[in-house]
Length: 380
Image (cartoon, rainbow, N blue to C red; front, side):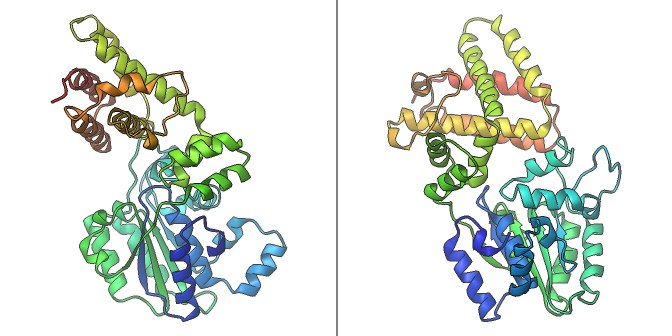
């Protein structure tokens, strides 16, 4: 929960500790976390370091206080994407989900926006940060500090700001209340509004070392060989490694579904009756929630990239481990320079369409048919 317990990012943590020691903390900074490298964990930890006295931290830790206890400090303000759900039917606010949020931060600090939406029962929603939310933040930050010290705003998901809420936040950053610190987390520097980006100190999180991920997984009860595989396959993302470890049945289902699609795609060449099987497959995937659909496409994208590496004989970089007995080396020759870019573009375009609330069954029908055409292309 505090900086010394954040996994990896040693150089950045040293820099943050130094800024605390020298009392030269920028009033606005943004951590760029590509995926599961600990942006949220780091932002929250640094925010708590700004608020909690070391002696009090030691006292409460000796009393074995839960992580959520530290998150209840009245001078830390959390802003995050929200959406309607079964319990909140209109005009959702961060305060409506604050209990779920504290649990998410405590238990899933390396989770992504899809995980967050699932945790609040909004798996078919995108989530956003409204201008009304920034209005509430403005009022809260202009109140006197409860403890008489600093006030901290941790905003996770800066890319979910719309133009109105972004402009409102900009005014707050430009003229911040005394001793107020803003800590933002974004997936991509390109997604930041230029006006906000120009007023923040930007820090990009590095991939976490495989040995650190492996050690963490083993501490969670993962078998040593599996921990080694997950760490190697995670691309420096602890969030991804944890997803492998905790959701192996979902990964197996994704593999089954994608392999089924591939086999139908190959059989469809010269056999029109197989189109019925492709449409049946599309109906199955199209019935999933949008969050699961996006997770499935991420899996497919990684699958294709692994096959491409195998096709180019970069075997040392291939870390695919089948869960259903599928042999990627037999599929690899069909992913090559003549179609690899189209396959990746297909995954990205489908994900974009899901974000735009496209009809799932129609979308994946198109996906299956295009996959058939692309896979049967010859290498140039």
